[in-house]
Length: 414
Image 1 (cartoon, rainbow, N blue to C red):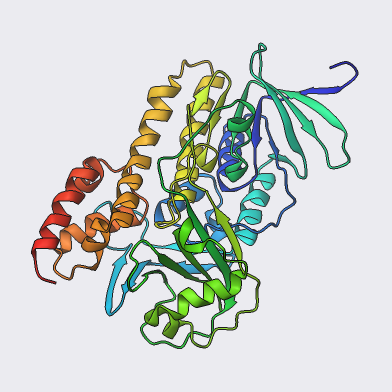
Image 2 (tube, one colour):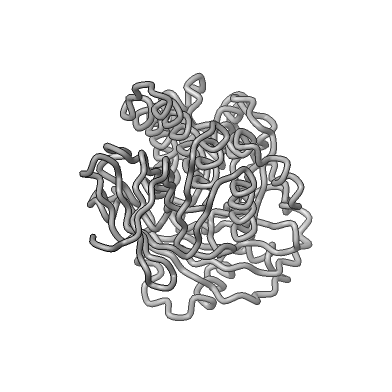
């Protein structure tokens, strides 16, 4: 490229969302030169608003916990599930893994900007409204072509690139790494409301996951925030939502058809137009390659049902930053066996329970009133995000253990 501006950096991170901000901050704290390139201008809207407890471990590791605690986000202490008259609540303070007992429910525009600002305060440079248009990993060092908001371009060369672009999936697209997901095509319709909830059974310190009364593969999230508002969404197979031209009417219709949730939201002011996202489940052929690694949703996104997306993103950021620090310090790193394989173990654990949710087996377990306290603590650990804790039998053997437990629940009267 003749006459194009060029620069040299040590590490380039694509995306300033939670995984990008945390990875960059961790690398900077270890003395590395880090540049984040972000396509949008923050703050910007995003879903994935109910954090799991394991997220707090990585926020703390990146030196951002004090700022997050001071921001006034809604404290989250667990997860609640409702189906008809059945109600089952899990407390993150009572888990097999003994992890962080609380986390937060956040409006992502504010939360993501806070983390990005914290990374900047630690010395990370962030360039907003810049887009990666080409990537060359065949040269001696990775080269990214970047387009600024004014249309001008430059090339940045670095020793390594971390792709934290989330749904943008920059490197998977540019390097043809995308692979089909084996999850059925699902769609979400969601909004924010002024909730005015006065239902005495509703716990603002928990996410509420509600199963549709008759179609158990349809479910709702209700995520309360600290400002009297909450996020409400419905998730269903795409065919259930086909032809829904009025998103607001569609979402309200599903809520009204679910009496327990309609009661919770009976006073809500529906003051924000609904949005939709579909076909979000994604996969890739590889999580890493010469000169790059993929973080979080840029690599794989399963499903929003257990709020695992941000947790996987932050976990991958912490793992990749630690390995990259070693590599940049001259230590040989095996990205497959030290990053891809162990990361996938936790992702596959979440996958087993997501699949179990939609085929009904995990719902049978969650809604069964007879589960032992110890089994509930093991399940609560997974719901809190500790899907990598191999000491937990329901993590070490998720498919077999869930199948066995579901069979016991099915044979035992509720």
